Every structure is written in structure tokens, then in C-alpha cells.
Image (tube, rainbow, N blue to C red; front, side):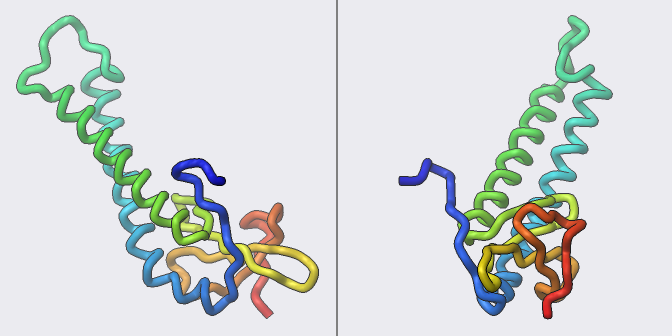
Length: 139
């Protein structure tokens, strides 16, 4: 039995993986936007509020609470988008690049189909331990 929130990767055909791209794109866009919002709020927290530590003076208008709320909301959105990707059975490998891998069967072994969100479809694959640097064009 799997743990709550854990989704076992599945094996995809190239067609099945490509069919998920229209579903993945908005999830990756949400993820990227939430990561930007969280970074922006974290920067504000660090610059204006010294990482959340006050200087002994009250912050007018609950600004510190607002920034903490923005960080929490963005973090929740990141987790939601990442869970949505995992629920599909594929693997988010690099949220900065929008890279998603799909396990597939090649003769005698399991490998990854590798897709970046700016690519029109899946064009590459790599070994399970190969990473982005090991990407090879599909034949």
C-alpha cells in the first residue's frame, strides 16, 4: 500500500505521454507562477522584516502577516501543482525548466521520456540515471 500523497510512477507509451502535455502545461505554468510569487514574498520578508524577525516595533497594518500569508499561499499552490503532476504518474524533475519525465519501456530496460514545457512534444529520452545531460533524440 502506498503512503498518502505518494503516487507510484507508471510506464507510458510515447503516445500516452504526449497526450498528457495539454494537461501538464497549465500545471507547470501554475507551478512557475507560484514559485515566482513565493520568491517575491520571501525577498520582501528578508528585506523589509529581516527574515520575519521584528525590531521590537509593531509592523503597521499587519504587513508581516500579509507577507507570511503570501508565502503560505504560494507554497500551497506549488504543492498542489506538483501533486497534480505526480497524480498523472509522471515525474517532475526540474521545476525551473519545466522538465517532466515519463517512465517507458525500451528493449530490455526502463528509461525516461524527457519533456521540457517549451517543447511541442516529447522529443528526447534518457537512462533513469542519465539526467538532462544524457538526453538523446527519439529514434
